[in-house]
Image 1: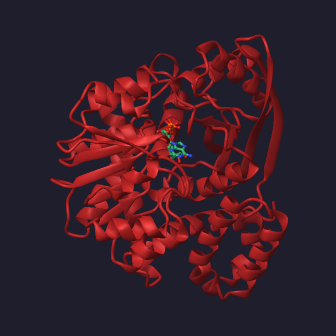
Image 2: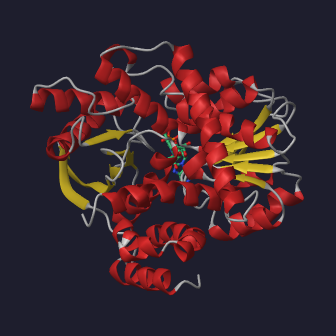
Length: 446
Ligand code: NDP
């Protein structure tokens, strides 16, 4: 970074948030790529856009007490960071994972600003969560936690102000319990959460949206570079919501998915993973990925989730968590013949890994753009809730596809306009930033 204004802003961010490496990483990546815009737009500097952008509008931290199955009191820490409302009400998921602390929620909330801007829908950005581990908990314990979490969170959210959704550890079951508690406290049946069940205000395709959207983005990126998904070998990290539906759509588009993982290890199935038993294992039984071998004894299971990246592939889709692909893994993927990487998870590739991909001509789809299909479909769920109507699966899927193709082209166009052809990561940041910055400038110093 050479621009003095951006350097000064970043110094302040570092000083204010010293123990939050993930947040600082996300901010650095954006500031570096918007430098050519700032060089040309002194009006953004005069309006203090960037120093306002890096400071959340509001951060809420709260106690979440609940009672476990042994009658013992447990206490978790809950978070909601309402980052930016320049283009719409706050919107972003809830992460339930033991690694959650304020720095993770801020990094995710910051990324959400740009992602939501790219969707073309009117959504501001927030993120929430708790350091609660849903793994191994009974349904009753999950319900007790979710009800307690919502008993505080309800004060800060609403269908016109802040609309949470799922993320790691928060799926249909957790959203259901949270929605039930919100309705009970507020006596209001509103679209205050997205990712709801189809029987009570949910949208078709929301479950599939992030994974399907990732593949629609990937398909367009490949097409515009003279390639297709047909016949490609794909590896996907994770086996949660995003990973499973990325696998399903990649297969529908003609690819063979040979490996998936969880935090314990990974499976390799030479002829292509059989999604029917895998979905049952992960979505219904909540089992571990190694149990897949019960259904496919010829497949292989290896301990350690990082090993998945040693698998020979044409395309890699990191869909588990942040910073799972570093420089060494990036080089290994290239050595093994990988031609494209698209991020299903948020910030799964380190800045060093992204540089290796870009320097080596690997097609790289950045998370903010490539995984925006989830929140875009949440936006469509909000529209359906406002209309009090439910669209068909086909209609939502078609809208999702249109949005993902549009997102790819806004990244591509912005990259070209700033002389960065093929750098969709910078293109995504620039396109998203321009919209937010104009909206913030128009609304004055708030
Ligand atoms: P899930 O909880 O459904 O699945 C997460 C998967 O990633 C699991 O297989 C989990 O393994 C694995 N995982 C999680 N944390 C780690 C870790 N620290 N190390 C290794 N593996 C890990 O979450 P989602 O699929 O919803 O989310 C995955 C990613 O996609 C996240 O980065 C999320 O922010 C992002 N995302 C999700 C969206 C959505 O709509 N759900 C939208 C946009 C982005 P295990 O079961 O062993 O923990």
